[in-house]
Length: 422
Image (cartoon, rainbow, N blue to C red; front, side, top):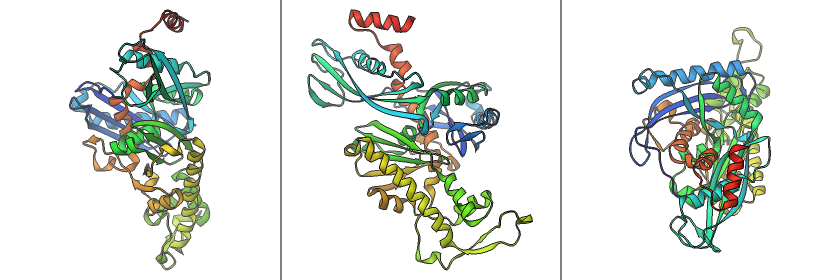
């Protein structure tokens, strides 16, 4: 399905509220194709968030406020002193539910219009009955007209019946309300929500990967989110509550060292794959509870790798099992793209290829201009993807669809009136 980008000159802002960091990007659309130029970046360690869930509203609010303020200062010339008001925000994968549905609309022999497609999407949205869920994405995946399948762009074609396969992504209302409270207390309005793994894929996949089939695995601090793309659309997304912070905790426990030291050891010496040199290479491990660090323990690097590798294998095994159970295996293709902060661990690509039996590459934001080096790593794939989503795919927002759809028959007009007024 084709997408219409927002107008040139539009200023957009994305807020990625993660378990390990909070990031804010401010960008401007610089041409009619929707290309984005980054104007401001702010990021800092997360607070009040654990595994995608708000645990301390005040701490989360303060962290969000400071992050946004840093991005505003960097983009001050464009904002002209006006504070940021609207942001697109990530939906943590652990709170997202993915579901495929279909809808049929009669087109009575005329050409398929934008409104016909919207009618099908609006009809699909009625199939969400769970009161504890809020609809986030309504994504048309494939179409058929009078039984002729494989139609990528139905607009302008003629037939009697339009059938659309649609991917619905919903989020847990309670978790979203708490996240919204922390953001709104920072005097920001949420204009859109986007699944974290969807955003990561939009920023790090090339067009051919989206078309031919690829899986994005976004390994964050507390959550590993993953999404499957095929024929240019998101067809499945899910998450597990394991990530880089769990590796750090394993190291702290296994080597009896402070968490801060465990994070440093992981960053400097960690690897997801063992090598022959690990046994002979010694590392200094600060002991836990000693004043001024005490005398460091000298340990072989193999001990550290022996803690990291099993946890990363477990993460990949969980992802593989979920993907096999999802029913989308035939659409996945051979390509896996790893992104997220924890994907930068040396050896992770090789481990992923071995466990998943796929071609694996590392992904980073490739769709934005002007990203500073500090914000162009895989850790910022979701943040960058939120901007891509709101600039190019805002027509997948449920409210946008309902606002623009015009009812077809008499009964559909009555149903729409009831929905709007009751």
